[in-house]
Length: 139
Ligand code: 5GP
Ligand code: ZN
Image 1 (cartoon, rainbow, N blue to C red):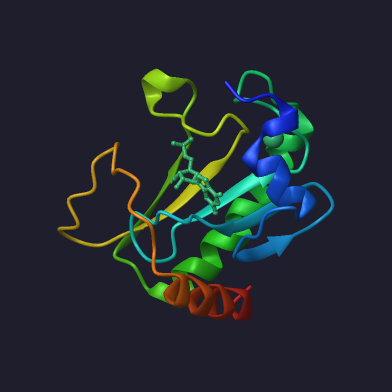
Image 2 (spheres, rainbow, N blue to C red):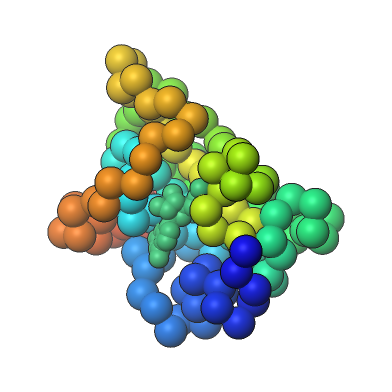
């Protein structure tokens, strides 16, 4: 498991690696997943590092859920999915691959056949950038 020093999401918070940022406030950050299960697949994280749900502070979880509601509504408005799942993984057995707590906002399409382990297929950078602009406009 990554510690805070080499955590990729801490680097996104610090701005040392780029992201398609959607929303930021004092405690949370939302950005597009670079391997989207469907267009509009977004992640919401606390800025404070915690590896998983069990290690998270209640105040960070509350702040994350407020941001999830806000961003999920904007994603729904932007991509008009048939439905939308919130997902969160704890541990490799649950397919957690980044050990900084995060909520997935995953728009769904009828018949998309997404399973819990949808795999990591890189998104098109131009499409991700254009979609981030549209979702931000709907916040
Ligand atoms: P997990 O499997 O841990 O629940 O999900 C981690 C998610 O983080 C994956 O869906 C993966 O595509 C995404 N991810 C991994 N590295 C990066 C990155 O550098 N930038 C962004 N935007 N997403 C990432
Ligand atoms: Zn981290």
